[in-house]
Length: 264
Image (cartoon, rainbow, N blue to C red; front, top):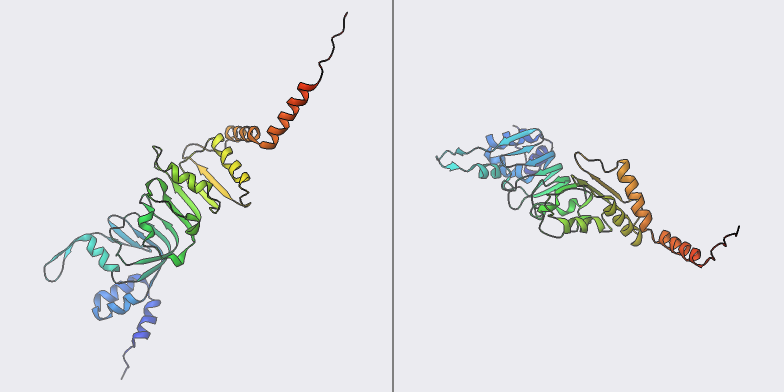
């Protein structure tokens, strides 16, 4: 007679079963649901959108339905029920464009996070802090309402802005923070004077060599010859050593006697 599987052996099996098959098994075998949910999901990609959840290549749409008792189940609640009861999910990439479908106590362990246009402080509460620092964090800083130590959260920041001057304070905090080592700004162009001020700040505060800053606009290349020449000119004119040399030169020239004119 075949011995029944033990709790530990079932957990070990679920560890290596594809996510789609896991959901099918628990839907057909209700007695295994609590065991399956005890085993963390390990994914390559996890996405929460307004109308769907995507796990790897499988997309689960947001549709209402009636249970066996004839009770209508809300679409959002149905999506939540798929992940409800789980303690954590591990994924390489995590994209969250809507938090309405995320169960309250779920923690996401991720390598990279994209919070879309959401307030990142809301997304932060769902992230497992043991996954910090993330490899990459993509976010819209204009919609974030709190000051956050991004250097503790991610090695690389990819930041979008919302225009209309929103988020200017947070942008400055990120740029001038000495521990933010790799920053990318999407759809933001800094003029030569701004870049010169930024570089001078790095020099004056003796920030570590190796900082990477990238800024680009969809239709404007900030690395154009006009920008580079303008940036070099501004930086040269603001260089303290260069200013000192120019002052000394003017002082010497002012103290020299004027050459006598020859009388014909």
